[in-house]
Length: 210
Image (tube, rainbow, N blue to C red; front, side, top):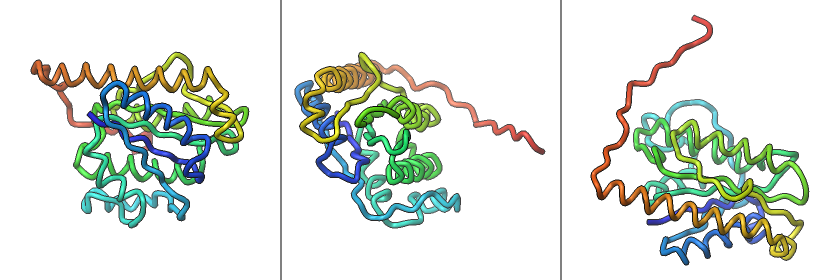
């Protein structure tokens, strides 16, 4: 079992990475594989709603989004990390997740269905809960179980050294990792025992204006 950790910060080894690295270490201690995917600093366009992902099986733009989509199906769980910018997720990770989840939903590949996910945020001081709420909405729309911890998944600090002093924040990351590992082990046991996936109905769309 493997978990993909997404670093949505423009700093490859900054505060968000420090939180994800604590999770990675704990997941590996629990016997799981864990890889960190950095979205980088090159420009990431927002979704243009062209819906070409439904026929192409990937996003129409060629960048880190498609690189992520190429490997995402090989993982069993996901954790997305973002710094707080203006009391919300950073612009790059927002564009990244908009396109990843739209393409993942429309490409017909079922990349994320019933796979567990979690959000992690880092901030100097405030805006963490608003960002946390924003990121979790992606998971719930795609029927992904959301993994919780002992507190909202956040760390505080202006640099990695300060994050390492956030004892409660790092403990929250370790608890999150253990909860993710437990859920994935239970999911695997259920699959081995022959527990069927839920029945799925054809989706109904009700428009407010007809």
